[in-house]
Image (cartoon, rainbow, N blue to C red; front, side, top):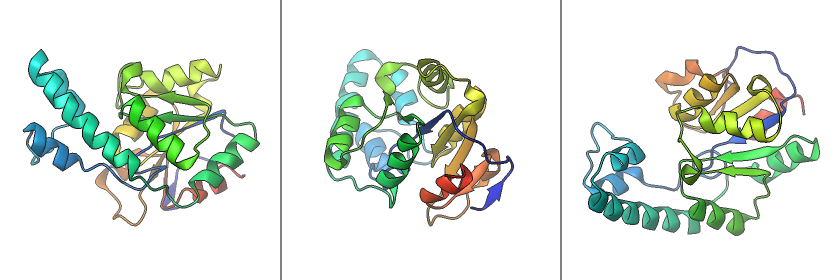
Amino acid sequence: MLSTTLSSSRASVVIFDLDGTLTLPCLDFDAVRREIGLPTHPRTPVLEALAAMAPDARAAAEAILHRHEERAARASELQEGALEVIATLRGQGIPVALLTRNSRRSVQTVRLRHGLEVDCIYTREDGPVKPAPDAVLAICQRFHTSPRSAWVVGDYLFDIQAGNAAGATTVLMIGDSPVPEFADQAHHVIRRLPELLTLLSL
């Protein structure tokens, strides 16, 4: 753990990002951008770019994105300790949710490939995507809990922004990468998933 600004407390729900958090990074977003025709410098968020397209162009771009997502999902590998962390949380009665900007179909592919057992899945088909807080709030509502006792775990700025905007505790997982400039926006920074259990005193 690199930094801690809040004391440990029991979570009422833990909300995980998928790609790069529960799985090793598996989707090449720059390859998606190049095939769609989006700039890679600066990097344009793919979903926001698609939303601004005319219907025909958007349909073609979505087909490209779905193909890349499905290929990545079929080749995905879990982060070390992912299954054990999820099992420990659920064994302690703490619901586990997946919150991703990916498609539901690709999430289902990952779940079946690795035997991921979670209590809730929220994808881009379900409503506003991260960094909007809507999904975090919806998940908390589903489990009849306050966002103040929810924890959001992800590897990217959008995860942290969504959790913070909802009022949740945010955890940035960076693996072996250098500490990013936005790390100070997270309440906690970890390198490996099992460190989350330490933060939660589990």
